[in-house]
Image (cartoon, rainbow, N blue to C red; front, top):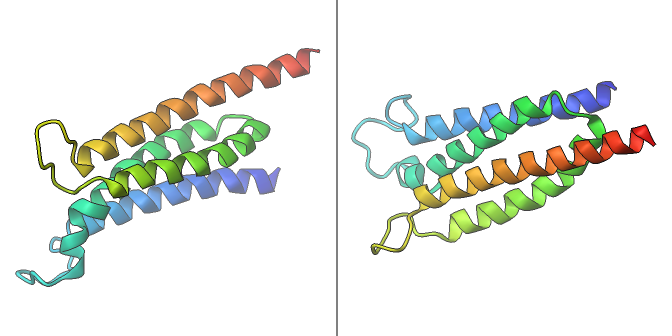
Length: 141
């Protein structure tokens, strides 16, 4: 039981760390990561390309991890295998998208980040509901 609870706490902790890291990297001057007026700071370039997608995706993971604290351990283990591969796929689409949109019909990285994190959250919730119903049916038999 403790091992499984620690997985839930780890998922929650990773999402909180991702939110904090994304926020700090998005405002490198405000928190002293970069010196004021230093345009050569590495974190300024990562602002739109990495920090913003990290924050948005971690926020979706946070929403799921709060929900995940209350689901059965078997369902959480199934989701973990599914969620890792889905998150890698979402991050792939986020990272191949250009930071700035070059046309009217091409999305920029911010839009793709919002779409992918929303898709990740919706698919995760649907899969968890399906797996929870399946687990309950198994117990009734």
